[in-house]
Image 1 (spheres, rainbow, N blue to C red):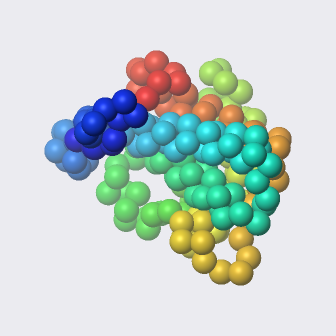
Image 2 (cartoon, one colour; image 1 turned 120 degrees about the vertical axis):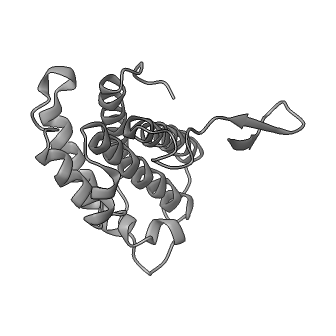
Length: 189
């Protein structure tokens, strides 16, 4: 159980986060769903932070923009891992390949197993290419933990506006695709 302080409560709110490990629940589907939920949460948080930054006119030099990219990277990583696991790639295989936080490798694996061919649902050709551009931009800094720890003198940021909005929409499309595959209702955590 994960604990979070509720806005109207005097104590923590308990939420079931699923099995503690990929073996405890017995099925990789449980883990794919946990990654899907994580991706949805990070994408939702990214959208909230983005709106806050835009509404307040926060300068691009503010570190909150970097934190936004950390959320985008986490949503992409969790979404791609969920896609891969939901398509039968065992978690052990993901670990064996050393993918970790390597968005480019995760995306390539997803493209190789059929992301590009799944056109019937939500125009996956466009989604696959959009995700490729996203991971090309944010992947290296995400994998090097630069967004997480705000390290280094230079950091890659997506352009405010359409680039970030398209990124969030693409992440939601990936999450929706996995939701359908897992038999979940799209756009629900």
